[in-house]
Length: 368
Image (cartoon, rainbow, N blue to C red; front, side):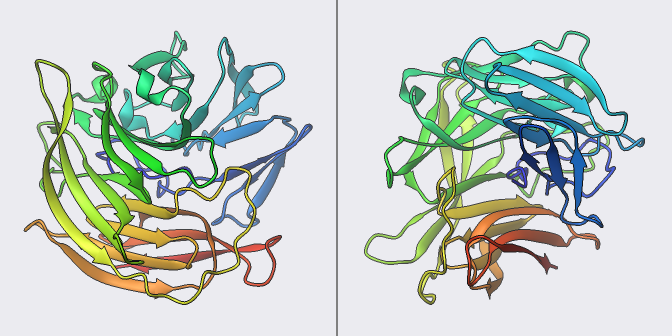
């Protein structure tokens, strides 16, 4: 849908748009409709048939935008540039594709990047490179074999600039194929020894965020860092939600990730009205809670209650409640991006209609 969280990435790529909430690609056998919530009209049709597609951000001053299409029957991926309406590159898959998404350019060389997850591991695919062969950035260990990928994101920085810039940490939520099975939160080092860290074996949601002390305007180049990991989990014996911000480190000798410290915690009260009308979705209803980060803001969306709660991560390692809103509609998807005013966060919600699951609305919340 909107593309997932990007809160763990240090912004370095030029702003050709307010990034963070992607367009939605609706695919059919003969055409694809691109739905952009803030365009008028919001929908645009292309004569491109596909089993599924993901659209990139606007990547340059010419408005170039790339549509990555998956053709399941042919096991082939094709990338189109939508302004010029040309094919950029094709990729023949030799193994099953378990999960894919567009990643911010900062995670690999400040260029167009798609993440491809297969039974072998995770691959960065840069279609605009001279040699656009996918590059493996982590291996899938035995603990992750057979797991359904619920969500995936990357964050952190290796201290490089330009083409040398890389992310350092991946956060992956996984589950079994069993309905109602718990969701696990895994951390993996990117471009390193792929020894995963099981951070939590029963989470409601999770996200990466940039630590407040990391400068976003360092004249000497970006800092090398690991992002914080935000997790939302159940409070035993209660309907409340435990929100926790953890620092992650890596042992340079063994390559093992470890939890350095708990930075901040908060309890999100969940004594809201009964659950709202819930649609049937092909990808299921996990995660139960959306977690998104933008600057110092941490956004928590309780999907089956239609509630959005926002916290601010303070310099003194505390979480301050900014506000909460009861929307009363099921959260099909959500995304965050910088607001129009500096320091603001804009939350975009895709909501199920109150009376029928066959309709929906877009709603926006601005946090100052």
